Image 1: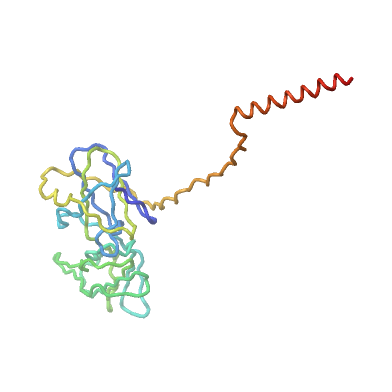
Image 2: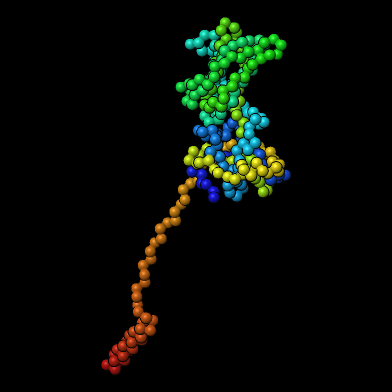
Length: 279
């Protein structure tokens, strides 16, 4: 059954030019919003004919998946209300993507500084996600990644406490997202489409997750294409109401009408003959 697009959604293509395996594996980039619960409940896959395609989410776990950067440094400032600090503000793109860690890179050769990380959905009210310390010492020992345990938020604020030291040289901050992937069955190559962004949909229930546990056949990797917004379909146009035609007047059976016509002709003939006789 094909679920209708109830509200404005997002869509991205998956193109499989040549199919070499019965299953296709696609890693979901951070731009794919997993929804409020972080479970991708509204994600759907459809084939070129618009039919739903069953899929499995993270059937093999996520520990071996490559990490993705959800956002990198957007703005750096030095708050007047907090002397001796530098602040980085980032936009994760959506509020649902779980962030695994915050990575801080710099050319400063040696340092030891406190870091406070906060999240916000509106850029006004902030909630603390982590309070840690980043370090780098001579000899290559460093700790510049702060774990945030899957915290979510549209906006992120990273404050580094410099104290009386100079700010970190050429500092760059990145949000590293938790990786996720889907696997779906494919009978032929072609174009598939991943839809998401409809909060009215519940998570689907498919047999495929259990099937994959017992199916050793290979999976063909593919990439998600450019994400675009798609509008809901317009409402169905109702046909115009039928206009009732007036029924023709009932003139009686055809034989009666013919007889009446013949009688009228005969009467006219008699009248004409009588007029001739009078003359």
